[in-house]
Length: 479
Ligand SMILES: Nc1ncnc2c1ncn2[C@@H]1O[C@H](COP(=O)(O)OP(=O)(O)OP(=O)(O)O)[C@@H](O)[C@H]1O
Ligand SMILES: O=P(O)(O)OC[C@H]1O[C@](O)(CO)[C@@H](O)[C@@H]1O
Ligand SMILES: [Mg+2]
Image (tube, rainbow, N blue to C red; front, top):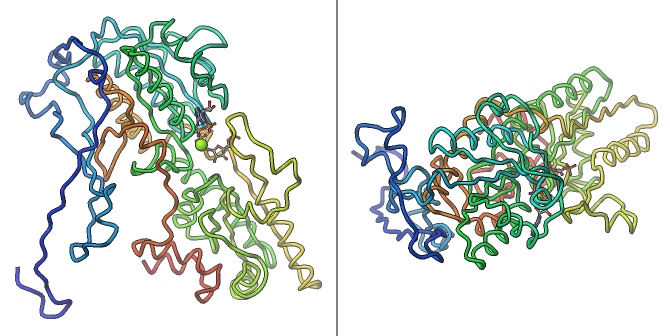
């Protein structure tokens, strides 16, 4: 192609990056003489395509982790080993390592709720049943503790779960805490489970690593797969977690209400608190998609209230300019600024997560103090909306439902093929198998530094005062 008449000078650049294939644990790593069978999909009239060779995946089918490179740079982050990694592609294999007649699958959900949990459970059941002919599928009730306490696992079948994708929550129930490794693995052995599907967030994945390690140590013929669930979208490597988009969509209702309330008052502020313990993805995406939000506070960026570049100065400006303002805050933002008693400093939930204080309630009271101190004679209103569980206690939207289905089926194909200690997930749009240990350590903060996300950085910069005070609406349109 001819070089453009104007524009940057063209350089000849070469691209030779060696991709390291991330090894994936397999039952044959520690068990000898495992029998293999031909995949029953071979005889499935709906699945078996004319070109069977192209249908099944082999170990040479990989997904690249890094697809964006700076070809002119040899010393940039692009050379970091993690960016050169590739992962096995998810999907059915020609040979399977489990006889479907001998599979006893267990499904468990742990941690907080997330839209799509029931869809994943449903699709695990339907997929195991219809694709592979598995008939012994059990739901473990109430999280990790359900393996060893609280009654018998529930037998599951397609008829029972047929409409579960239309229900929020988890029909298997969930809980925090109760992780007792020995009791869990003893129960797995005692009940004869040989495929364990563990659906949960970062804490759950750390537990899954321990279960996988213990099963490995005991040399059990048991496959373990983690299915990452986090409404906060705080799990790394994968593109995003299921339920996140649904939550962002649900948050719009709260933002709309805050906007209406703010607009309808003199010097009105609509304040919305959204979930996000350590990451501000929900707050940020809800902000940017709404176009009604003036300021978004996320845990990844510190902010301050008073003085030049502080939140109050920004709001003062917006109220003068626009008569009202909408503020969105992620629950994990500003936690260091809220006064805590000694008891509150120590308070943790059953899983050991620090219990957060209500940043929304605190901000509301600080805003009022500020306004009436500086403007004693002017009207002012703060309407605080905390939709908390309303954004996650719903069923998944259409996009998340498809995502959950692909995740569940990827998990089944992987475990039937003998892989274990892995997580299925989309990387750059393609489903891959990632070692659960790697996923359990990978975080996914909002990237406030990368130039590709300049529009995001502005959200924080504006508050810190490095930029003129512009609303998100205006900046978001520019990019
Ligand atoms: N380091 C760990 N080792 C073993 N088990 C853990 C660990 N961290 C958490 N768990 C267990 O995992 C389960 C879920 O953990 P947690 O309550 O932190 O939720 P999560 O999986 O992080 O989900 P989310 O935070 O998205 O709601 C609990 O049963 C908890 O005891
Ligand atoms: O009140 P629960 O059920 O412990 O869950 C609240 C937490 O769970 C999450 O939804 C997911 O970690 C967080 O955003 C929130 O802090
Ligand atoms: Mg968590």
